Image (cartoon, rainbow, N blue to C red):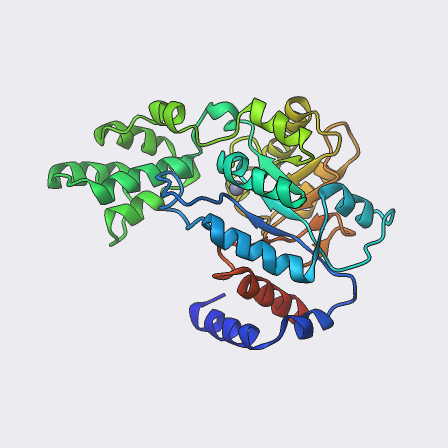
Length: 331
Ligand SMILES: [Zn+2]
């Protein structure tokens, strides 16, 4: 959505009542809001990429959701999709992507107290802080570039390594580094005295197996989010399918999760029908439900489910949900 269109869309959605927007759908309506992290801190590996909600804002979001929707878990969604379970009221299924530690330290205790279930989508490579996601590497570099005075010679060297022929500030160029070019981030880091390994050890940005087990014990669901969070558009269809099935198998092994849920890294837009057919094809690793990011709606007989990006769709839950409802009701 372009900026002007987005502005008017928000403006209209903001002037409609939640009740009116909900009345445009057949009852009951099931929505899927998702987040990455919730934190009161500035996180160098996240904050240059997007603004995670602080704890108070997150609580406000849940208060809004709780007013209009009943919280359900992934299994309820699965059974509902299969026609095995009915929903009495409008409902929401909450989820979190990227397996970030704050989901355990900040989100879990609160949701557990409130009795709100959630699904946490994890990546094989990040669990136990084994590797840093290449986007988080870019964020760490930008964090240092914005805080540290660097010499014109060093700036030129970094610029040459990235070699993106754009008239943009260096930080924007670092953020524009693509998956295929990700090694360049490992080359730049030492030039700025950034040690990714050290950061992984000290900061521990991701969930550990132990934390995942504890979340499972408390009734949370673990889902898969690909092996290394690569953008699927940069992969062949075979590679995309392997990313999905491998991460589903990893979740089963690591979390002993009996059902197989997958959320697409970055976006599900552009993923071909052949890939969906392949990941749904019955096997021990096949996907039972998959999730995307396009708001509200389902495809593939309810099996592929759109979610609402609560960090990007609006400043608060009301704005995000109103926008998603209006968009879906116009489709
Ligand atoms: Zn993600």
